[in-house]
Length: 335
Ligand SMILES: [Zn+2]
Image (cartoon, rainbow, N blue to C red; front, side, top):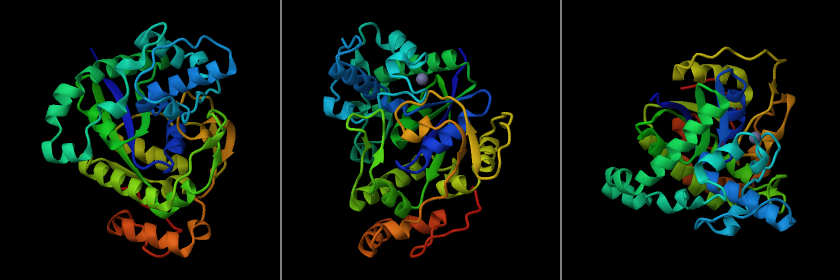
């Protein structure tokens, strides 16, 4: 049977992965499906929210992901429907998890190896023993996604490098990893501000302190460098400055042939519908949308916060072309 072609976006959260996924979704034959790693949590979040409202059939067998975690994930698909009403995700749920759904076969958090175990013991034992049952469920999920979307390429922006590594070791998957990076000060500024999200209980996307975001950036970028050393790198700043050109160059570098979508005025992109799971609430934007340049982090972060993030991430800043003390305004290269 033919392997499922997956373009896997790896990198820190709040690095523009939803923008990249939406852009790629506009190319014929490519379907962006969001953060598949959180499939169980998002589906349970949707059912829990329906139960809280007193509507919908909310009988299901939960897995060991806590209800609190489930409530942090969007219950809405990118098509603006609750996941259980979306024509794609409702069918994936029914065919993979059954009716009523039983999510115990998923839950990445309990199946992934600790970083220490991976570094000291390697990945072979984990892939052959612990991840084997997840492999069967994951194959069913991605094959169903390929069948329902009729896409030649599935774009998964789960971002966690370990999950991408798990996928790239599956015999049924043909994975092209992409390393997405953003200036860690820009990411910290983005994470310091609350953002409305219609699909999340409480209505807001989470915020974090700069110490958390620095550690998160370092861990994700270092791990992706180690696991996907030869893969294409996309910087968020390049993507925001020239969205369609950057997406085109990425597809060319990845060897995917796909006709470019209709041209739009400079600085704008036309977005149709999508079936992006979880991810940033920008996934709900439709029509001709202005692509905003990256916000000026030097105006958002105070000197102390800037110093913390710069010092913590210093060794890797230069590797990705970010200046240690100032904001770079002209980005050019896709490496
Ligand atoms: Zn949908």
